Image (cartoon, rainbow, N blue to C red; front, top):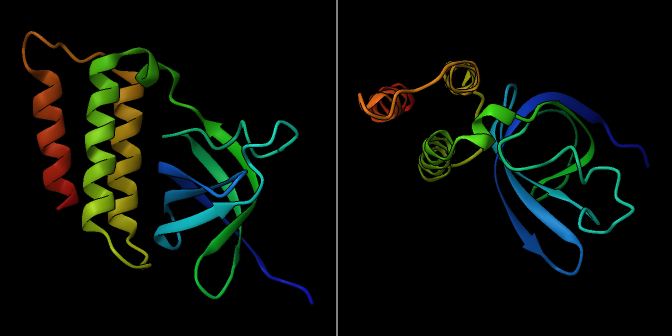
Length: 149
């Protein structure tokens, strides 16, 4: 039996370990909206997906639809947002934005505007410095949250 592999871009919003070596990811995708997708065997040392699916990474994903959720069968990291991971205040903003999306977006529904807003917010944080003394991160976070809502 052959399966159709859907190719899409996505941002990993969160992850949760399940079973012995599997992990379920919350992913905001360009074509499908927010989905939950399982990567089987990803916690094993020999897994080829292991380094492409870190939290908050931007990746090209190969997905197969199953009855209950998606399976990740291929991934290529496009951007790991290194500048965000190195700045604690930026990382905190991204955690809260991802949490908001996970709480507010239920079900699989494409939303191009949401995708563009979140991707642009990540790009902005990656490329620009935020002045903590002038409350730049708080203002940026509030504006992003308003756009998401």
